[in-house]
Length: 318
Image (tube, rainbow, N blue to C red; front, side):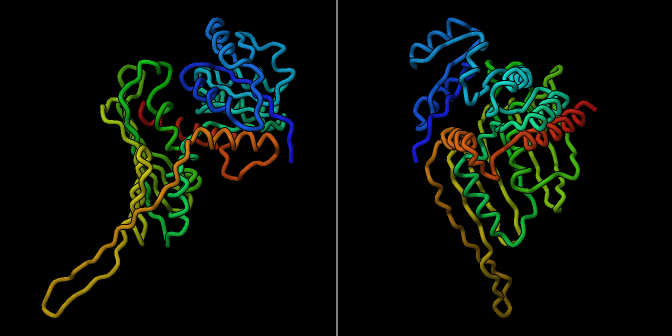
């Protein structure tokens, strides 16, 4: 069936915004309506490159737009969502949903009142390694705990948010996605001034599972790891290399007069190659046509992650 193209406007043309621009420009069924940035010259330059209007003010650009993608600094997310909500129903906003829990609640109320279709940019859900990991865990006899490790050295381009809002928020969402709603949160961390640069959190989930999350941007080594302890296996998932290794205890033997011998088997899971951002934006476009997946991170997922982030901030500051 032939569909009318979805006209998508892109707000924010920094590094992440330009990644979105690259993908949006080649998506089938998508027509770029405009690109916008507070730097008018930058917006004009990129607009010319992609053959679309490049603007610094939205104004009438929203009148003929079906959807918007917001890739602006975190502190502006809530304001931009409120700005476009009156004219555009379909909104994609990069993570996190807002800068503060108060603003996230304000956005959630606005979305509910206006029946908006909002997707939050938790891109790791679309990492093919995470998708394969979820399939493995769904078949486990019982998941006990999942450990998440995410480290990066401090980036000169990120100065408005700390490590919890910048890095850990991804794994907070994954913890909720894989282990379900949280019952309690405990955390500690290290801050230089008002900025938290290292944080460690323990989430106890309503189903009895645990999530241990560690995030650092004072570590020179870049790591993206998920390790799951289950009653029937241990799973190593490397998100950067997109590798999954399952270690299973196969059998225990005891010869007469000899100690126990434990035999283990390792299994590598093949992960299909796929660019996560492409999958993420394809899912958003499909949701604009009312084909919304149950796994799509919406405003309530964004709000749940912000609630836990707020608890972690308070625990570290205590």
